[in-house]
Length: 344
Image: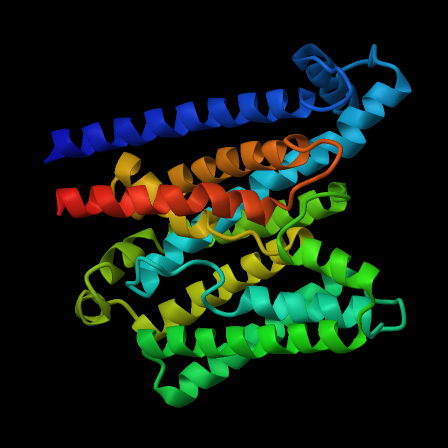
């Protein structure tokens, strides 16, 4: 048994190390891709200079392109990919539903409604940004899901059904506001945001989302054994001494807050939290202490390259990130389901 545990730990360590190296390399290379010719050496020079490692040899324009435009966008893509993948992993285990993703609680739809209300209706009188409005809308949607699921009994299927109801309600509200009050320019901007966009992000978005991701990951890792127990059902988890109700509310609130933070900064980016957990399980197994870090790294690398493709494939026009994730995610998910069926 000890030998088996040692092999598993070694495998998890190797996956973690390889994933970290791949992520750092992906970020460095992705920043170089674009209209301006920039090398990996330029990227390291700019990063070192801004982190106190000496004077940058780059011109102010090239330094600004790297540090103020491409680097925060690429890092936020990594944070969003990692966060959505982790949330998907937790949701699928907690709800025992392989089709669960971070948006099953209606958080994305609520964020969309909040953003549209601020942009189109001007609620807040200019004091609220689109990100703030999206975050408030996401919290309102999640609060509605908690209220409905608690009223209906609080079981996992009631949580999912409450999330579907909230999703449909806020989607309808978003469509109503856009159709009745938005002009053509506002409609196009809102649609682009609803499909996911990392354009125009700054370092503040990166730090806020990264901090929420770090806290969420620590909380989820602290509940790793509990999540392992939930795989066998809530009755089995309760038999093992797990406080099912408390654990569910803690993890649901944690993942919902992370999803709200990510969606408020980057819009609704689908399929990352649905597909990546399945791919990570094929590599790391089902133990959440190994699975969660591997899933985070896989999601980060995946979205870094998806965003790079989205901003360059039709240059100078940009494709919404959510469109690219759907185009890649649907075939990948079908492949995952097919392989699962063959090994079942």
